[in-house]
Length: 239
Image (cartoon, rainbow, N blue to C red; front, top):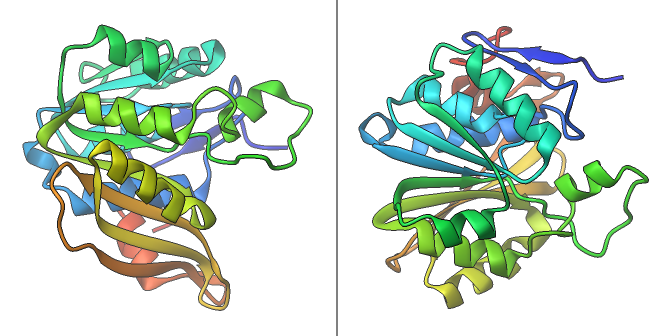
């Protein structure tokens, strides 16, 4: 059984109300985004599908930006609100309980940075837990809809970052390009140096540019890899 909370160096994520718990690849994604962006200068950030609020909390730790976190699930939105209210940066963090499509329709505000760890499995075996299905599967949000919302809400000079399964990255990049979003960096993720890629972290912008590619392994043998440890050191208690 998963722990009801996950404690970091500067904040705690309570997760008893949500179907999706704190996971290593999401933590890596948050730390990677903070490393890629000149985050201290950002004025505003949008977190699409915030869940527990993990990514928003990680970015609030490293920036002074105002962060809007959108979450369609009522219990997850309540959970994120609790986590925000108990952290040192509660005045920066704002939860919005609605779909990102509705949020995009209502919002005339543009963002310097948009982050998304979306429901990314499609046409795959689902669990009996509907809340978990919504959190994990493309049941209520397609990649086409996500791309359209990101483009509408992203400032011309802004960046967008998305975490996806390795096998859906090329599909995403093709969809995003049609919308007007271009990949400028991709970091593939392995569980260990001996495993195949299973996730990709993609950084995008509205102007086309030559994209760079690298990869990171979470572990080397039984220990966290050097690259992973350096990224997560500001957050993980054990590092």
